[in-house]
Amino acid sequence: MANRIVAGFLVLLVGMMATVSYAAPHGQIVIFDKGQATYDTPENALNSFFSAYMAEDLEWHYQTLTEAAAAEKKADFERNQLDPMAELAIFRSGFVEGAITETLDYLDARVLVVRITDDIGDQFLLPYTLVMEGGEWKVTNKYSDAEALEPYSDFIPYQ
Image (cartoon, rainbow, N blue to C red; front, side):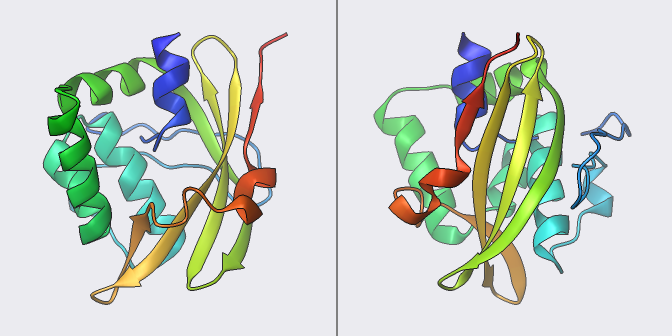
């Protein structure tokens, strides 16, 4: 259950030099080392975002977020007295694979719709929004409540 909850958040996905594969029209989520991280495209930035989670590297994770998103996440952890490392560990233990299934523009953001499969076989369809900040693509949460993006969210239980 905890894996499902964490995957529903900024799910997020290194140090293993593994490639996560899943057949999809727009590409797989690729897990890599921090030294390979780039933020020149939304796809590369999102791979860095997931890779930071898989590496359980909290500082790297914050680097993949906009300044506002990182500040909000840190404040949420503090306010709710949550251990951010526990979130990373739970996500890492439940993540199996992910793929970008669709891309679209929304206001000033690029939306990458990702299908994530967890260790139980459940799938989550989640829209990740990325914006340019300081010349790099970063994950933002400023559109997390946007009704227009709700059709891109879904939970598909394992059958």
